[in-house]
Length: 639
Image (cartoon, rainbow, N blue to C red):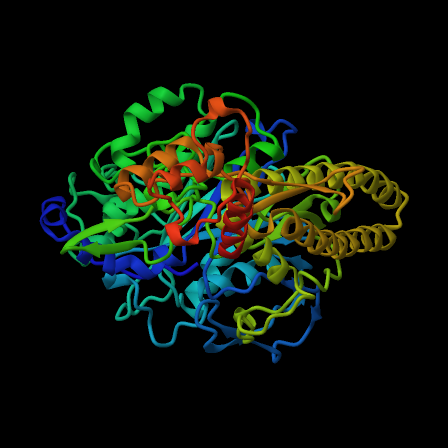
C-alpha cells in the first residue's frame, strides 16, 4: 500500500539529522506497508512458483475483488479509474478492445499473479503530473485483465503508464506466471517532466531462488546486456543525471554499471532498514542454509546501524519450500531474529508481539521505535498464490486468500478462473470508487469475524495464539485434501472438452470454501471466547457436576512475578494468610490443620501481628472457626 515520499540525503546528512525528521518523511508509508515473498519453481517443493502478499493498511477493508471477463468491440467505451489509496477519481481510459481475462483478487484465469509493495522514493519524483490517471492499484487490476504472462504484464504496465500517466509513488511489483518470476521497481518521472510514465528496472528471479521486498527499493546495479533477465527504461540513468541525483562514473551511461536504482531513487535510511528490510531479513533468515552467518552479516544493517552491508537481492533456500513454509514466513513477528520483541516490557506478561501505533514515539526528547514485523494488526487482506504449470490455464492459479493479520487469519483456496466469489469475502474496493465501510460492523463479512479473533488473541497472545495456529493448520490441511479431489474432477472435465463445466465446478468449490470457512471461523471465535474468558482457561471435563468443565487460571510466569516484586517495592507482599496456606483461584483461603504449617491467622491476630487484609482486632471473632468464616466472606466480597 501507499508509501509517502522522503527527500534524498547523503550518508553524512542522514547521520546528522534527528531520527524523527527522517521518520516523519516516510512515516505514513510504514503505517501502510506491505510484504511480498516470491518463490521460483526451482525453489518450490512441487516446482510451482508462489507469491505471498500482505496488503497492510488500517483503512483497507478485507475484500476479495472480482473482475469478470468482458468482451468489448467498441473503442468508445471507457473505464473510470480511482486511486486505490485515496478513492479519488483520477480520470477515464478507453476500455480494452477485445476479451479481458477473468480476475479474482490478484490473479487471473491465465495463471498470472501480481503483488506490490510501495517504497515511495525521492520527493522530486513522488508528485505525479496533474494529468496522470493510472495509479499503482488500478495498474495491477487493469494489467491482470489484459495480460497472460509475466513478460506481457511488464510491457502492459509500461504501455498503460506511458500513455495515460503514472499517478503514484515508487513501487516494487511482483509478477509471477506458471514459468517465470519477475520483480519490477518503478518510480514516476516527476510532475514537470514532459514524458509520461515511470522509469524502471525489472529483474528475472533466477530459478531455484527466493526473493522478497517490503517497502524499500532493493534492486541496485544491473547489467545492460541481458534482456532475458533484466529490463530497464531507456532513461533510467539519464533522468537521475538530469535531476542531479547521480554523476556518471564512466561518462557513458550505457556502460555505467555503477548506477544503482535503489541507492539513487530510494536511498536506505534508518526506517528503510529497520521497518522494511527487517521483514526481508526475517524471510531470508528463516530459509538460508546458515542462519547464523546471515545474522552476523546483516543484523546491524536491519537494526539501522550500518547501511553499507546490504542484503542480497535473492537467496537460495536450504530446502525446497512448501505452502506451509511460506505460511510460516508470512506469520513472522521476528521470532529468533535480532528484532524479536516478544520478551521486553512492552510485550507484557503474555509476550505479545504487537504495540500501539505510531511506530516512532518520543520520551524526554529522545526518539524510540516499535518494530514492524510481517505479522501485523492492520492488514486488510493477504494471500499466498500458487501457480501450477502442469495444469491447464483456467486451473493454474490458486489464491490461498485470507483477511486481516497474516499470522492469525485462516486462508481458503480460490481458483482464479472462478466466475463468482464468496459473499463473506467478496467486495468492491476503493480502486473502483467505493470507500471501505470500516465503520459498518457486519458479521456476515469474514473481515470482521477475523478481526474479532485476532483482537481477542492480542490480549493473551502466549495462551491463545497456539490454539489459533493449530486451527489454521488443520483448516489448511483439510482444504489441501479437498482441493486435490476438485483438481481431479475439474481436470477430467477440461480434458473432455467441457471447459465451461470445469470452470463452473471450481467456482462452486471456491464459493462454498469461503462461505464454509466464514461459518467455521465464527463458531471458532465463540469457542475461543468461552474457553479463555475472564483470564481463565476453561476446558471440557466429563463427569464434572457443576459445569461439565475444568476451570483453570494460568497465573503468571516466574519472570513476570519477579518483575512485579522488583518494581513495586513490596506493595503486594502478603504478611499474613489464613493457616499460612494461601488462597485458591477465587481468593478463598486454603486451610491446613497441620500445626507444622505455622501459626494460623487467628493466632497471628491474637498476638497482634499485622494481617494483609487489615482485619482490626475488634473485628476478630472469638473462635477459630468463626474467624475462618469471617476471613472467607471478606475475601469473597473483594473478588
